[in-house]
Length: 448
Image (cartoon, rainbow, N blue to C red; front, side, top):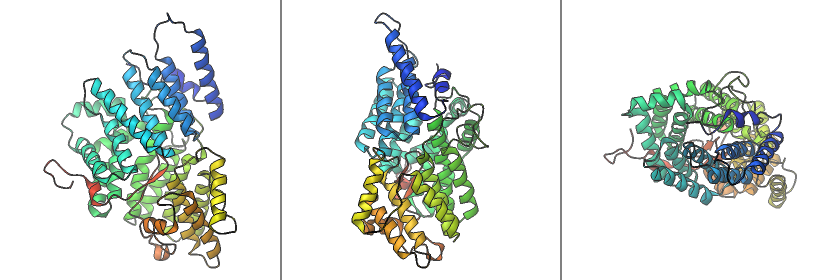
């Protein structure tokens, strides 16, 4: 069975710019449509090209176009042996695009469609489907569901009763395991507390996850996951490790992991973002939208802020704000910041990141500036911009509850830091889940 991304479609992804890649894919699709007659054999090539187009659109932050291309790939997938793999990859792409843009109902429908596809094929839900459902549940604050799904993923990764199948995935599709570990780890980390951190560490450090991460670094062009998705999934695993280290005040480990997440998300890590310097021979050098760096830069900025390295932290957070499409706040009150945010949104329909990430970046910037003498006015402008972005409740009181007060960085501790979780794969800040995010074992107890 051929993987969803063929060498041909990935070759088209290597155009000099995302616009050029989109043009090449669109022109090829038009050419295929013009040359195909009703008597021609059914081919999965259009679906594969549409899937690649969804990757390009996601890479440049065009979420509606990415979601539409992914759905067209689902519809275009032929009835041959490749159809299920292509449709599943396309539905995965649609879910991520919809969750990033905040179209949670559309994402839920795509999750249900993927589960239905597997049920129709006579099998139970696969690891990627469970992981995707866990991501949706976490993003929408459904803590019991997210915890239960994460516990199921953890059970497979730590206590798998089919080692041969796990070995096959590590050798042929390692991103499945990396994705499952990243999703389960994110849910447990957002549960908070020592129990949540211990569960997250057990997933991130388990044998299958570490072996799969190494294998993914050398995965060939024809791996089932496209380069954008591979980079974001790998970055998600590193970002989860970085946020765990932050919660444990291990600044050095947090910096290393956040740096790895940044390299993977921006396509500078080689092998889909698995490490190394620059794109490798196995990884297309597909240009990414600057917003792909926003979430890792936020985490990295947090690291330096909590180490009281204010100048470095400010530079990182300003870059994160710029990459997220946030305009520099100008003078004036809340109404002025509403206009600043409106201008940011009008420049990209919708903005390249979820409002929760935009609000968090602006709020962290306000917290950082509150540490510096004579910058209180500037800090309040950033706080106003954070509220205007509409994420995490949409007002300053809600932001202070979720992310800590404006003076929360004093003493190097950010109140609320162990709560919301920054997810790189959907450029979104996910809610604190509490103990419900720990899930339960088969006997009804919490995961140990």
